[in-house]
Image (cartoon, rainbow, N blue to C red; front, side, top):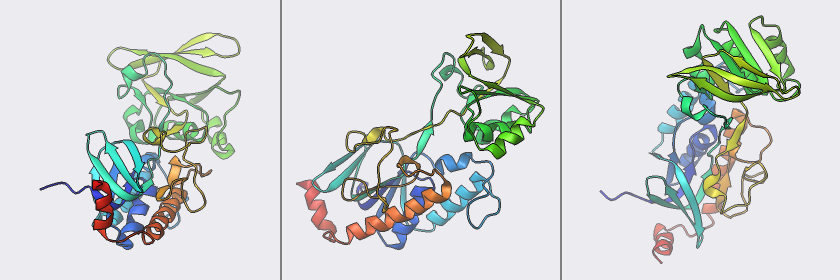
Length: 320
């Protein structure tokens, strides 16, 4: 059976923004395809969520499961692959994937989210999955009873330390600046913990080990003094970068690599929308991403109903 590759709408990503967009698109009866490398995105990393309306407390994994159950109630096709390029030509969008397939649509919603930034130090890549991790929620329980280091003093680093200090006898929290940068209420909890040692103005110079991580080498940025910490887990929490590499030749991104959008989730190209953490919307929250996804889908619907409706009309454009 020949693979279908023409759609009204293609949604790139299946985090809270992408899945919400999918539900809204389905309710508007748009012929929709979702292309994603995973389900849930960053939301699955959250240990406890207390600010998503309707849930006093829910884990990220549980919330994502509810999103997925809602999405799969509709007849929306999902392709699990990675997007490598998005092309806009003659009013149509063509998505190129890493497995060399192409899908075309009259409208696209980019909801590809962000990925963790790396330290880029010796030993990091070698020990990914063997002591180096970028998700305390996902991997924290594996390090129960062990000494670990968390790199990054922003909210993501503080949240990681907060989780790990409950199960690890020793947690080192490293920050480049002269003080922690996360929410004060979380800082106070960590500063009051007997098993957390905070090292400011400190950077990781390398990660070492054999089959698994055995420790890290550090340097104080003020004194130049070097140190060594015996840890079996290194949690890298130094921020995220937008997943926009596939679109950088199509759109002008902001200085952080995010996609600029207006209040209706529209980009500079008609028919192209963006939603969630991949955009320049200031607050990166699950509930904000979900709302953005809804706006983007409704915007795409309004855009599409003003175009020629017959599939044959735009299929002919592709063939021309």
